[in-house]
Every structure is written in C-alpha cells, then in structure tokens.
Image (cartoon, rainbow, N blue to C red; front, side, top):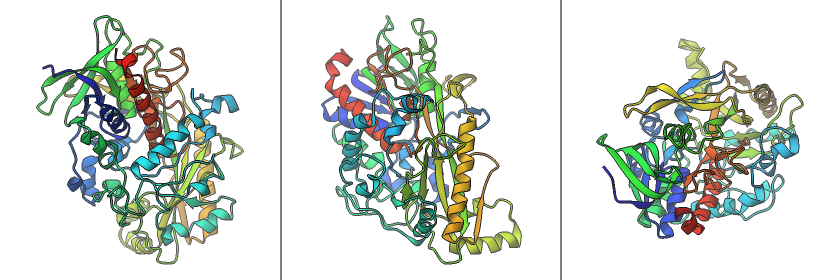
Length: 522
C-alpha cells in the first residue's frame, strides 16, 4: 500500500533521527518517522530492572561472531526514543585528537572535518536539550567554548571517595558533563537522584529524545509511526535517487512511503543491514556500496570495570547512572607505553542490588550473603572506556537466515586488535591502583571476556566515494538525497560516550540538509 508522498522519511526515532525530525519539521517540511518499536510515553517508564527490559532491543536478532562479539542487548533500543531512552546521559565530547589520528599517528582514519567544525554544534546541543557540568574545568583538555546551561550535578560519597585515589596517580577528576537537569530546565524538573536512569527517566529530568528534539518535532507536525519495520530503501528506475522506503506496519502489512529525501537514523548495525538489503540491478552490492565499504569498519569501546568495597556507608544507591566525575588525563593516544588509543575515565554511577550481585557470580549461600551485606554498604566501581581502532574486517553482512518479514538477518563480526586488548589490560591495572590509593578494602576485576559498548561505523564519512560511504554531513556519495545519521558514520570512535557527538554531528547534517533542500530534494 502506498501512502501520500512526504518531503522526508526518517528511519528510526532515536537520538539522531529526532534531531533531523526537529530541524526539518521546523523548516516547514512534511516529516514522517518510522520506528520499529512501540511509541513509549513517559508513564510507561517504570523504575524497575524487570520493567526496564521492555525498552531494550527486540525484533530480529543480529548474529554475533568474532573473537570479541559485540554485546548489544543493552546498547540498542526498542521503540520511540531508541537507545537514548535508557542511556546513562553521559555527555563527554570527542577531543581534537580523535578527528586526526591518521595525520598525527599514521594509524586508523581521519575524519574529513575537525573538532572546530563540530564545536559550535556541541554548544548548540547543550543549550537545546539541557546539560549540567563545568565547562571551564574541562578546558584543561579541550578548547574553550560556551558554559553549560546548568551547574554540575550533586555528588555523593560513592563518587567522591575515588577522587584522592586518582589524583595520587596524576589523574585529575572534574564534574562529569551529563544531559540531566541539576536545576529545572525548559519546564522539565531537576533530577531526584534515585539512580534508575538506565530503565528510562519518567520525570523528564534526563534529556532523552522524547522530551527534547522529538517533542519539538511533534509540535512542528512531524508524524511518528510506531511498530513499523523498514526492510528496504527504494530508488527510482534509473537508480540515481532514492524514492522512499518499504516497511511493514503494526498489522504486518507491507507499505510504501514515498519521499523526496530518506534519512537512515537506525542503530549502527541496522543502517548497514538496510543498505545491503536494498540492492537493485543498478546497485548490485547494496545501495551506495559500489566501493564495498557499507558494513565495514565496525568499532566498539572496551570497558575496564574496577570493583571495590570500602569500609564505610557510601550510599551507593543514590545519584544517577551517569558519572559524577570524569577525566581525560589518559585520553592521549599514547598514554600507555605498550598500548594505543584513548581512555575515558568515569566514577560515581549509582548502584542497585543486581549491580554488585552480578560482579561476584562465584559466590553462593552464606558467602554470597556476607558479601551482599558488605556491598550494600560499601560497594562502588569505576569504568574506564577504551578506544578500538577501525578495522575493515569488523563488519556487518547479510546472513542466510531471515526475519518474519523475509529480510536477511545481520551478521556482526567483531574482534579487538592487540592494541585494544593491551589498552584494556592497562586500564584494569591503572584502575586497581586508583582503588587501592583511595583506600578500598577489597578490589577485584573480571577478565573472563572484554566487555563491549557503543557500536560505531558501518557507513563511515570521508572525503570522497573512494574512501567512505557518506560525506561529513551524512549525505551519501552515490545517492545525494539519501542521508545516514548516528554513530554509524563515525570513522573513528574515540573513547568518550558517543551520544553528545551523535547529536552534534546530526544537528550539523540536518541544518545543512535544510539549507540545501532545493538542491538535495530536487
């Protein structure tokens, strides 16, 4: 069934899709967003680990392969708001060295733009959605910019207790920049610090898309269609432009939505899967894939988690899942002698019973009971995010198995290289030194497998069609009215949580599309 043609159809109503929807709807364009999951309302967000599973990935699974398979269960979303509905709202930015690794180290790839190109959009995003932090304190590591619109969040003992330990190692800690309200902002209340951010904030204090850009888009008459699974991007007969998308609605009926412009703003793995599945006689390897780079250069961060118990009541249940403190002091690519890549350091995330229980799967019976009593009083942890470099062998491909709509499943192959493994091990050792210096009575780490988080790549940006899938605005080289948004267009991943950069790069792309609309849409 064909629907009335619109100006733009956006696939995915998460962080990047909501930005495009807001900018284009406010520019007077007729916008339709197609989202595979439900249209969640604030009243659906319940502070419970069990209920929170509803907003985690569902639908067709990805097949996971490689030495270090990507654990996406907590990393993608299901429904309107996407993964940003349950994210931790940590909003560090990429630093200048992230954009020029090839030029500076003859490793990895360069972005076709610099930090200075993105910096104004970092400032715009912060004031659009609301951020708390101390921008001045961050300027020891980055160029100066505007202040955040709100002061830093309140801190609690389970975060404060780490500061002296890090400082003894020469690691300076400053208030973490987060997309949460330390004060009321644009009619949204201040945070109540109950530590349930990761299952969706029901008050609006956390800046998820449904209360920020997507809310603005809806006010500007953008239409959101939930429970609509897109299976193909369609082209004109000549194969020179995209013409819309094919999708299956909530009744599992095939639909076609024609549009002048298509924006793919799904999860990183899904963007590549859609392009590969949209092959035609004019695009035999998939859309915009004559160079064979669609699905290539998938990247993920490693997490070095250091667990500790202190002999005092540190009120670890209070606060937010976002960090209280952070540091870029190990962000230089050569910070460790025998490793390569950046590290982003955080501490002070609120803990729940299941958090400290899951760190000791070896305990049972009385031993587990005794541990849980100590942990409830004194458990806390730090997370050190390590960079993985782009590797063409880390990839998305189509599998022979198919989903309920006949679309091939995606196969995600991922392995860390030796540098990433060395960086993870170096971070584990550094973190344990910090814990002991802070006075922890018990310190331990898990080494069974390298935890993964934050998927990037698959449709990377570059200077031309020979080295990339899209340009710096997310516009496809071969099909100029097809845009891709989100971390899938990042050619490197840094070590910072990506959402702030996702929003900034998306805002830059959306504003360019609005300004060049007549040329792009034809």
